[in-house]
Image (cartoon, rainbow, N blue to C red; front, side, top):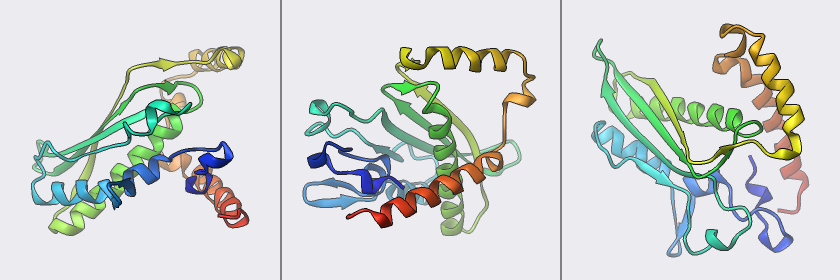
Length: 191
C-alpha cells in the first residue's frame, strides 16, 4: 500500500517491506521472495530454507531509516492431529512497541494466512496457520509520546486478557479503510 511513497530523491522512503519481500531488486532482477518461500514449502514443508530478507547492505547502512524488519522465516510441520501447520518467525532489528508493533503483527499474520492458502492450493491438502513468533532486538518507546503511552498502559492494567486481545477480523475494517485511503492517495500522486 505504501510503494508509491518510495522516492528518495524527494527525501521520502527508500524502500517498503512489500517491495523488499515481493520485488527485491538485486543484480538487475527482481526476486519475489514470498513466492520463493511458498514454492519451497510446497515442495518440502519441513525445509529450513524458506526465508526472505529485507536488508540491503549496499544501500541500507547509509540511509536514515533502514528496515526494522530483517527476516521472515517459515516452516511447516504436522500437529498432533496430523494437520499441516505453517509457522512463521519475523526478526526485527528495531521496533516502535507502541505505534508499529500491532500493525506489523497484524500484517504478517495475515501474510501467513495467505501463504498457508497458497501452499494448500499447490499441494492439494489443507494447511492451517500455526504460531507466529515475533523476535525483536530493540523493542522501544519514543519519548515524544511517552505520556500517551502511559495512558495506554493504565487502560491495559484495567482490562481483562479477553478485553485486550482481538482476533484478526476485529482489525480488518481498520485495515480496509486504511487501504482505501492509501489507494486514493496513490492514484492522486504523480507516480
